[in-house]
Length: 314
Image (tube, rainbow, N blue to C red; front, top):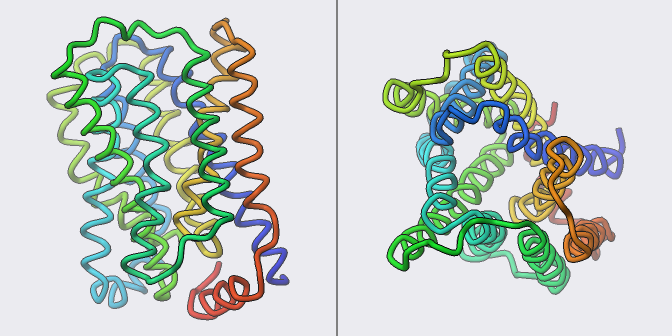
């Protein structure tokens, strides 16, 4: 496989992962009596357990390499565990609109800051243009949908904003730690499995407190199984594959496609209304991804090639 073909497959893997993640909101709507925290815990924790099972052989073979990178494993796993709790709590306290914008749009910013100050990579004009298009697109999508957020109290909104920033930070963090482990020789599926495995140990016990109605009906059980198996297990294996060739700051930009999928599914399956502003948002996010598909300069190509030589692609 040529380098260009591998790059295309990695971008495509992240796009498919974004599509799978975009189905979570619609799926969760079929279990309205299950709390969002329980949905997040069973999806992330269950998905992590499945990843550990799938990658147990390679994980054991690379255990020495993983022990040498225990800091990335620990902080990545902790970030995976915190992300769903912070994301859903942010939407509950600050409102769906504010929580969504801050959580999703701040992640690429945190990722690019990590790469800038930890890896010493410059922030490119191409990335800035792509981010501005994506951020504007997210704003348009949120503004196009009606939300019952007008009565949110000021102190609740402030806490919700902080939790939204925490969600963005943790999403960027486990994307960055996953990418770093892959560059250091860890298989992409193992890098995702070990982070989500740590998170599952932290999240699954929380179901004793939040999962009251999880097993109350066959519909709730079906939703839980779907969330763990398809968006989490399948989605993050694809995301890890994509990180073989894609930087975390760019991967988090591409995943701005997730709310587009979520919105279109809500319009199609849940009969939600959609305005012209929403279509503008979809166009802007498409522009964001299109900018990232434009070939970079020679310097960027040389850097990506050097990283691929250090990694262990599947």
